Length: 386
Image (cartoon, rainbow, N blue to C red):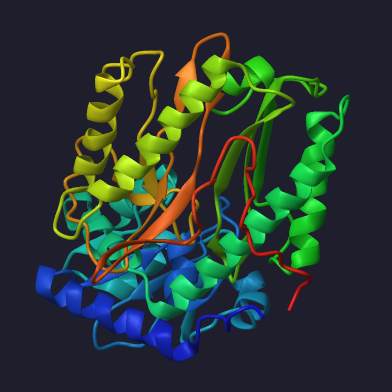
């Protein structure tokens, strides 16, 4: 059974924590654009366009939605948290509307995923000196997931792992990468995800040495390394899992690099301890790989990108397991663990699973791939949507 969606009570609690942080930082208002943060706080899912759809949060005042007048009925019927509405006609400025609502004094913090043109419009309406980014207010709240969020992601990742398993069973020589993408999409839908694949990258052979895959639509052949990176969502919360194996018999070098990748993933997990900075996890991986003759740093053969990223309503969200991110690991934070190893012009191995921080340290959402030869050994089979 899929877990229940996020409740109205939880969203109201999130808004209360945001308002408390605003008061502590001396911020008069926060404008949340049509990003994942709008869904996080209000339940409103909207696409980003040139027309402002946003929520204005002001401590002690009702939650206020800003939208074009002609979208009022649709927006009003889509919000998850009740509030008031400010509307504007096509010839009017939504930025002036926001400025009037904020008043003549006080700082407006703007969703840092809002488009640049929104920032420029607000700067003209309020004065740039009254604007700041809202990252320090929003990111810490979104980074620490609740039990309900953890439950949704746990289920989403289980669905994706099962979709992976079914795709692996379906592989045949001559099959195109696009056919595998379609199989995964059908399986995600059959298993009860929000829809099909939220994304999907299928690579064969030399294309696996490119972290985001090659161009074209290659056909699978005997001996190819197979790298599949895909995910789905439940109530907006994302899965993102990568499996790498061989269609046929692996070469000794592929087997050696796969084992190093498996060990690097374990080193990252071991280094993820409460109170340690995010960058310490990445450092542990690079220290291990250097000792094994790979790298150093981002040099290849080695790992060309960060060890992991945060995940939640966005597939990639802050904080990240990368050098320079000194955010301290805390309970509720969720990360990918994917220290990919690339052998240029030959192949790449990426094993990606996710973990969340608990009071006792890191806990896997999905267990890592157990072996190169039996990639889905021990995976609990899911039968149907529920």
